[in-house]
Image (cartoon, rainbow, N blue to C red; front, side, top):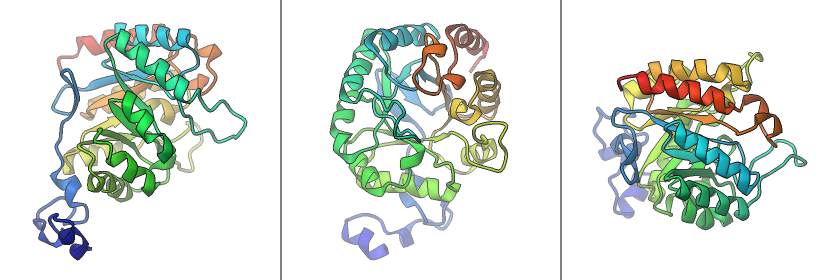
Length: 285
Protein backbone atom coordinates (compact mmCIF):
# COMPACT_ATOMS: atom_id res chain seq x y z
CA UNK A 1 0.00 0.00 0.00
CA UNK A 2 2.80 2.40 0.91
CA UNK A 3 4.45 1.86 -2.51
CA UNK A 4 1.17 2.51 -4.31
CA UNK A 5 0.72 5.83 -2.52
CA UNK A 6 4.33 6.80 -3.15
CA UNK A 7 4.07 5.91 -6.84
CA UNK A 8 1.05 8.17 -7.14
CA UNK A 9 3.03 11.07 -5.69
CA UNK A 10 1.25 11.02 -2.35
CA UNK A 11 2.53 10.68 1.17
CA UNK A 12 2.64 7.02 2.14
CA UNK A 13 0.64 5.68 5.05
CA UNK A 14 3.88 4.77 6.79
CA UNK A 15 5.01 8.39 6.66
CA UNK A 16 2.01 9.70 8.54
CA UNK A 17 2.72 10.90 12.05
CA UNK A 18 2.23 8.12 14.63
CA UNK A 19 0.15 10.63 16.57
CA UNK A 20 -2.49 10.85 13.84
CA UNK A 21 -5.99 9.71 14.92
CA UNK A 22 -5.83 6.53 12.84
CA UNK A 23 -2.15 5.72 13.19
CA UNK A 24 -1.88 5.92 9.40
CA UNK A 25 -4.94 3.83 8.53
CA UNK A 26 -6.66 6.67 6.66
CA UNK A 27 -4.10 9.47 6.24
CA UNK A 28 -6.22 11.70 4.02
CA UNK A 29 -9.11 11.63 6.48
CA UNK A 30 -6.67 12.57 9.24
CA UNK A 31 -5.46 15.60 7.25
CA UNK A 32 -8.87 16.63 5.92
CA UNK A 33 -10.34 20.07 6.59
CA UNK A 34 -12.92 20.39 9.35
CA UNK A 35 -14.98 22.83 7.31
CA UNK A 36 -16.64 22.01 3.98
CA UNK A 37 -17.73 24.98 1.89
CA UNK A 38 -20.73 24.80 -0.44
CA UNK A 39 -20.22 28.34 -1.74
CA UNK A 40 -21.94 31.67 -1.10
CA UNK A 41 -20.98 31.56 2.56
CA UNK A 42 -22.70 28.23 3.25
CA UNK A 43 -20.42 25.84 5.09
CA UNK A 44 -20.63 22.70 7.19
CA UNK A 45 -18.33 22.63 10.19
CA UNK A 46 -16.62 25.46 11.97
CA UNK A 47 -19.01 26.05 14.84
CA UNK A 48 -22.49 26.96 13.65
CA UNK A 49 -24.62 23.91 12.75
CA UNK A 50 -26.33 23.79 9.37
CA UNK A 51 -29.97 22.89 8.79
CA UNK A 52 -30.64 20.68 5.77
CA UNK A 53 -34.25 19.84 4.98
CA UNK A 54 -36.55 18.68 2.23
CA UNK A 55 -38.62 15.75 1.02
CA UNK A 56 -37.53 12.16 0.68
CA UNK A 57 -38.20 12.36 -3.05
CA UNK A 58 -38.94 14.98 -5.67
CA UNK A 59 -42.49 14.08 -6.74
CA UNK A 60 -43.60 17.03 -8.88
CA UNK A 61 -42.75 20.64 -9.67
CA UNK A 62 -45.47 21.85 -7.32
CA UNK A 63 -44.35 19.64 -4.44
CA UNK A 64 -40.66 20.54 -4.56
CA UNK A 65 -41.48 24.25 -5.00
CA UNK A 66 -43.67 24.18 -1.88
CA UNK A 67 -41.02 22.22 0.01
CA UNK A 68 -38.27 24.66 -0.95
CA UNK A 69 -40.38 27.59 0.22
CA UNK A 70 -41.11 26.12 3.64
CA UNK A 71 -37.51 24.97 4.07
CA UNK A 72 -36.29 28.48 3.32
CA UNK A 73 -38.77 30.00 5.77
CA UNK A 74 -37.45 27.65 8.44
CA UNK A 75 -33.95 29.06 8.02
CA UNK A 76 -32.38 26.08 6.28
CA UNK A 77 -29.55 26.74 3.86
CA UNK A 78 -29.56 23.41 2.00
CA UNK A 79 -32.45 21.67 0.22
CA UNK A 80 -32.48 17.89 0.14
CA UNK A 81 -34.55 15.82 -2.26
CA UNK A 82 -34.16 12.50 -4.02
CA UNK A 83 -34.29 12.18 -7.80
CA UNK A 84 -32.85 8.66 -7.80
CA UNK A 85 -34.22 6.63 -4.90
CA UNK A 86 -32.83 3.32 -3.58
CA UNK A 87 -35.96 1.39 -2.62
CA UNK A 88 -36.07 -1.94 -0.83
CA UNK A 89 -38.94 -3.07 -3.04
CA UNK A 90 -38.49 -2.99 -6.83
CA UNK A 91 -42.15 -1.92 -7.10
CA UNK A 92 -41.86 1.20 -4.93
CA UNK A 93 -41.58 4.73 -6.31
CA UNK A 94 -37.92 5.20 -7.23
CA UNK A 95 -37.92 8.90 -8.11
CA UNK A 96 -38.28 10.98 -11.26
CA UNK A 97 -34.67 10.58 -12.36
CA UNK A 98 -33.14 13.41 -14.36
CA UNK A 99 -36.43 15.27 -14.55
CA UNK A 100 -36.58 15.29 -10.75
CA UNK A 101 -32.98 16.46 -10.63
CA UNK A 102 -33.82 19.45 -12.83
CA UNK A 103 -36.88 20.33 -10.74
CA UNK A 104 -34.81 20.15 -7.56
CA UNK A 105 -32.15 22.47 -8.92
CA UNK A 106 -34.69 24.99 -10.20
CA UNK A 107 -36.57 25.14 -6.89
CA UNK A 108 -33.34 25.54 -4.93
CA UNK A 109 -32.14 28.40 -7.14
CA UNK A 110 -35.44 30.24 -6.85
CA UNK A 111 -35.20 30.17 -3.06
CA UNK A 112 -31.47 30.74 -2.66
CA UNK A 113 -30.75 27.25 -1.32
CA UNK A 114 -27.87 24.87 -1.87
CA UNK A 115 -28.64 21.33 -3.09
CA UNK A 116 -27.79 17.91 -1.69
CA UNK A 117 -29.05 14.84 -3.52
CA UNK A 118 -28.08 11.19 -3.79
CA UNK A 119 -26.43 9.39 -6.67
CA UNK A 120 -26.48 5.59 -6.87
CA UNK A 121 -25.25 4.83 -10.38
CA UNK A 122 -21.80 5.84 -11.66
CA UNK A 123 -23.45 6.60 -15.01
CA UNK A 124 -25.51 9.38 -13.38
CA UNK A 125 -22.66 11.04 -11.47
CA UNK A 126 -21.97 13.72 -14.07
CA UNK A 127 -25.63 14.74 -14.26
CA UNK A 128 -25.93 14.90 -10.47
CA UNK A 129 -22.70 16.89 -10.14
CA UNK A 130 -24.11 19.57 -12.45
CA UNK A 131 -26.97 20.24 -10.00
CA UNK A 132 -25.72 19.25 -6.54
CA UNK A 133 -23.54 21.46 -4.38
CA UNK A 134 -23.06 18.44 -2.12
CA UNK A 135 -23.30 14.92 -3.58
CA UNK A 136 -24.84 12.34 -1.28
CA UNK A 137 -23.62 8.76 -1.03
CA UNK A 138 -26.46 6.85 0.60
CA UNK A 139 -26.16 4.22 3.30
CA UNK A 140 -26.60 1.34 0.86
CA UNK A 141 -23.82 2.70 -1.36
CA UNK A 142 -21.26 3.48 1.34
CA UNK A 143 -18.94 0.71 0.15
CA UNK A 144 -19.77 0.86 -3.56
CA UNK A 145 -16.15 1.64 -4.33
CA UNK A 146 -16.44 2.31 -8.09
CA UNK A 147 -19.19 4.83 -7.27
CA UNK A 148 -17.03 6.47 -4.59
CA UNK A 149 -14.18 6.83 -7.07
CA UNK A 150 -16.43 8.37 -9.71
CA UNK A 151 -17.96 10.83 -7.24
CA UNK A 152 -14.56 11.75 -5.82
CA UNK A 153 -13.34 12.70 -9.28
CA UNK A 154 -16.10 15.31 -9.76
CA UNK A 155 -14.42 17.82 -7.46
CA UNK A 156 -17.66 18.26 -5.53
CA UNK A 157 -17.82 17.86 -1.74
CA UNK A 158 -19.55 14.69 -0.60
CA UNK A 159 -22.08 13.80 2.08
CA UNK A 160 -21.25 10.24 3.12
CA UNK A 161 -23.99 8.41 4.96
CA UNK A 162 -23.00 5.58 7.25
CA UNK A 163 -24.06 2.12 6.12
CA UNK A 164 -26.56 0.67 8.56
CA UNK A 165 -24.27 -2.30 9.26
CA UNK A 166 -20.97 -0.40 9.05
CA UNK A 167 -18.46 0.18 11.80
CA UNK A 168 -16.98 3.64 12.29
CA UNK A 169 -13.67 2.34 10.93
CA UNK A 170 -15.35 1.14 7.72
CA UNK A 171 -17.15 4.46 7.41
CA UNK A 172 -13.91 6.43 7.72
CA UNK A 173 -12.21 4.18 5.19
CA UNK A 174 -15.05 4.87 2.75
CA UNK A 175 -14.28 8.57 3.26
CA UNK A 176 -10.64 7.76 2.54
CA UNK A 177 -11.69 6.29 -0.82
CA UNK A 178 -13.41 9.57 -1.67
CA UNK A 179 -10.39 11.67 -0.73
CA UNK A 180 -8.05 9.33 -2.62
CA UNK A 181 -10.16 9.90 -5.75
CA UNK A 182 -9.97 13.67 -5.38
CA UNK A 183 -12.94 14.78 -3.27
CA UNK A 184 -12.21 18.24 -1.80
CA UNK A 185 -14.23 17.59 1.34
CA UNK A 186 -16.38 14.95 3.02
CA UNK A 187 -19.21 15.41 5.50
CA UNK A 188 -20.09 12.32 7.53
CA UNK A 189 -23.78 11.64 8.18
CA UNK A 190 -24.97 9.32 10.97
CA UNK A 191 -28.41 7.99 10.01
CA UNK A 192 -28.86 5.06 12.37
CA UNK A 193 -27.58 1.50 12.43
CA UNK A 194 -29.39 -1.82 12.53
CA UNK A 195 -29.57 -3.44 15.97
CA UNK A 196 -31.90 -5.92 17.67
CA UNK A 197 -34.16 -3.03 18.73
CA UNK A 198 -37.31 -2.58 16.66
CA UNK A 199 -39.23 0.30 18.28
CA UNK A 200 -37.46 2.67 15.89
CA UNK A 201 -36.56 2.07 12.27
CA UNK A 202 -32.85 2.14 13.09
CA UNK A 203 -30.82 2.93 16.21
CA UNK A 204 -29.25 6.39 16.12
CA UNK A 205 -25.65 5.91 17.23
CA UNK A 206 -24.96 9.17 19.04
CA UNK A 207 -22.02 7.56 20.82
CA UNK A 208 -20.21 7.34 17.50
CA UNK A 209 -21.06 10.96 16.76
CA UNK A 210 -19.49 11.99 20.08
CA UNK A 211 -16.43 9.86 19.30
CA UNK A 212 -15.97 11.37 15.85
CA UNK A 213 -16.36 14.89 17.18
CA UNK A 214 -13.69 14.22 19.81
CA UNK A 215 -11.20 12.11 17.86
CA UNK A 216 -11.48 13.13 14.19
CA UNK A 217 -11.75 16.38 12.29
CA UNK A 218 -14.34 15.71 9.59
CA UNK A 219 -17.68 17.52 9.88
CA UNK A 220 -20.43 15.24 11.20
CA UNK A 221 -24.15 15.75 10.75
CA UNK A 222 -27.09 13.62 11.87
CA UNK A 223 -30.17 12.39 10.00
CA UNK A 224 -32.73 11.63 12.73
CA UNK A 225 -35.55 11.04 10.24
CA UNK A 226 -34.26 7.72 8.92
CA UNK A 227 -33.22 6.60 12.38
CA UNK A 228 -36.62 7.27 13.93
CA UNK A 229 -38.89 6.16 11.12
CA UNK A 230 -41.69 8.17 12.74
CA UNK A 231 -42.19 11.91 12.76
CA UNK A 232 -42.95 12.29 16.47
CA UNK A 233 -39.44 11.10 17.41
CA UNK A 234 -37.47 13.05 14.82
CA UNK A 235 -37.17 16.37 16.63
CA UNK A 236 -36.20 14.95 20.05
CA UNK A 237 -33.41 13.02 18.31
CA UNK A 238 -32.39 16.14 16.40
CA UNK A 239 -32.12 18.12 19.62
CA UNK A 240 -30.06 15.36 21.23
CA UNK A 241 -27.68 15.35 18.26
CA UNK A 242 -27.26 19.11 18.42
CA UNK A 243 -26.57 18.89 22.15
CA UNK A 244 -23.60 16.65 21.31
CA UNK A 245 -22.17 19.39 19.13
CA UNK A 246 -22.79 17.86 15.71
CA UNK A 247 -22.29 20.12 12.70
CA UNK A 248 -25.89 19.99 11.53
CA UNK A 249 -29.03 17.96 11.07
CA UNK A 250 -30.81 16.74 7.96
CA UNK A 251 -34.59 16.50 8.26
CA UNK A 252 -37.22 15.03 5.99
CA UNK A 253 -40.11 17.44 5.52
CA UNK A 254 -43.05 17.37 3.12
CA UNK A 255 -45.73 20.00 2.41
CA UNK A 256 -48.35 17.26 2.87
CA UNK A 257 -46.80 14.16 4.47
CA UNK A 258 -50.00 12.14 4.13
CA UNK A 259 -49.58 12.27 0.33
CA UNK A 260 -45.83 11.51 0.25
CA UNK A 261 -44.86 8.73 -2.13
CA UNK A 262 -42.12 7.44 0.15
CA UNK A 263 -41.22 7.58 3.86
CA UNK A 264 -44.39 9.46 4.79
CA UNK A 265 -44.34 8.19 8.40
CA UNK A 266 -41.10 10.01 9.20
CA UNK A 267 -41.71 13.24 7.27
CA UNK A 268 -42.27 16.39 9.29
CA UNK A 269 -45.18 18.60 8.33
CA UNK A 270 -44.81 22.39 7.92
CA UNK A 271 -45.99 23.09 11.48
CA UNK A 272 -43.46 20.69 13.01
CA UNK A 273 -40.63 22.20 10.98
CA UNK A 274 -41.68 25.73 11.94
CA UNK A 275 -41.72 24.79 15.63
CA UNK A 276 -38.22 23.35 15.37
CA UNK A 277 -37.02 26.42 13.46
CA UNK A 278 -38.32 28.70 16.23
CA UNK A 279 -36.28 26.73 18.79
CA UNK A 280 -33.25 26.77 16.48
CA UNK A 281 -33.32 30.56 16.20
CA UNK A 282 -33.27 30.99 19.98
CA UNK A 283 -30.06 29.01 20.47
CA UNK A 284 -26.92 31.21 20.65
CA UNK A 285 -24.76 29.01 18.43
